[in-house]
Image (tube, rainbow, N blue to C red):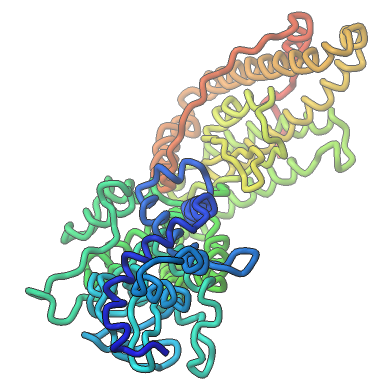
Amino acid sequence: MFNLVMTINIPDRLSAVAAEALAFVARDKADAVARSWLGGTLAAAQAPQWQVAHSLAMELALSEPSLMGTTAFDRLARAMKGRPSDDIAAAALLRRSRIRLARISGRVFDDLATGEIRMLLPTPFSDDVGDGVCFGLFTTIDDAHVAAARPLVRLDDTALALARSFVRPGKLGLGNGIRCAEAVYRHIVRNGVAPAVTAGAPGGRKPKLPFRPDANRLDALAAAWARLGRDPNPRELAQARGLAGHDALMDALLSVGIARNGGAPELASAYTRIAAVLMETMALRAAGGSGRGNLDAVAAAIDAGIARGTYPREGRHLFDSLRERVKLSAARATDDATDLDRLVQRIRALRAKTVEQGCTEQEALAAAEKVAELLDRYGLNLSELDLRKQSCEGIGIETDRKRRGPIDDCMGTIAAFFDCRVWAETADDATLRYVFFGLPADVQAAVYLHDLIALAFVSETAKFQGGDFYRSAESAHRRSATNSFQLGLARGINEKLQTLRQARDVASAGSSGRALVPIKDSMIDHEMERLGLTFHRKAPSRKRVLPGAYHAGKAAGERFEYRPGIEQG
């Protein structure tokens, strides 16, 4: 070991020589690591956290050995020939520096991974962080002294628990210092840290928490809710629902611990409230048929983060606690649901009669004729009170397509025909899916009509492709001919359904069933607000079509049969 008398000036040189080591780091690799912490895209360099991410990635790269087993400090030491002895000695100290987890109190260094207690020599790096739990590069000066070799980071309880997960049993040190540093630094970049209030700080000043209300919508909302002093109003709840999603929920759960450990109980309470609203909204979306509300997927992501050491166990405990509190209330009593349940079951039975299950297309279309009158007949027996006892639901339609097709032009008309709403969303596998949302029987009827129209697209397209127009077309134009036919088919079906809808409204004008439609619309609008979804209407694209094929499709669509006339019983 170095003699302390010989190295008394070494700590003063560590910072200057350590800065030179950065020249021996592969910066492109450090940049790639920083980008991976921020999502892995080139745009990560524009993120507010980029400077922190890049700085910590450079710190990690200093200790990471190359394929030849050498570190940046090793390469620096080899370049020290002819330099002053203090510089050479400082480079030697840097070569033997190690990533350590320690508690600093004054000049006492307590290694939390080995239990060693030594005296800490002053350097700018340790002076900058003061007392507390620190993480970074330290070098052993002699048997009794250590010094910080590079800038250190302070750890809150969450980050400390993450670092402790790398400690080998029996106080044998960090099992893998590089992996531990990568996990800790990634956590800091993505979530910040919330160091505890330093004992004896002037005036009991609270530390600055790593939240950015000026740049982050979640942090801004939490800061506003922390100042409320009351329950959030509907507008404020709507703001929270608009944030609902996998990432926002995980961030909110994590922020609870950061705020709590940072001595900000009002802020911790605000994040807890927001997390509960996010979970309720996601549960409602899942019940409404949307694929954007899978709480099981969030639980799995949290568990995976805990296993990797990148997410605190406290986050899972809070998730489980809030999930127990999130309960969807039953909107209708069982005794009052008999007629509705019977109607829904009849529509489901009709839907099951498809060509794939052995019936003919004519039989399937004949079954469809029953649905509209079933709904109108049911509506005649409803009062406003009965209607309001129902709860909205949604059913998702998987398309197995990643691009829009002509049949998608029918979705809005199908929903309107049965007083529903419909929206498109992208599934986890990037395929397109649609969600019909409304009162239970209306949604079942809309999905059934969708299935019939999909059936018509298959059968009518097959007929078209077996006809003279398609067979006479050049091979290069056949795909365009099929697309043009289907666009015309969608147009014809839409016009037919709109005409039928108008005739249905005229025929039932003044009846109690159709008179309840405005109330039904207001109920659906209210439930849509609770889902917290933001929709954007996509402008129709201009498509070039082959006129002959298009008009053939439109004529086929106009032949589509869906008559609301059935026998009693």
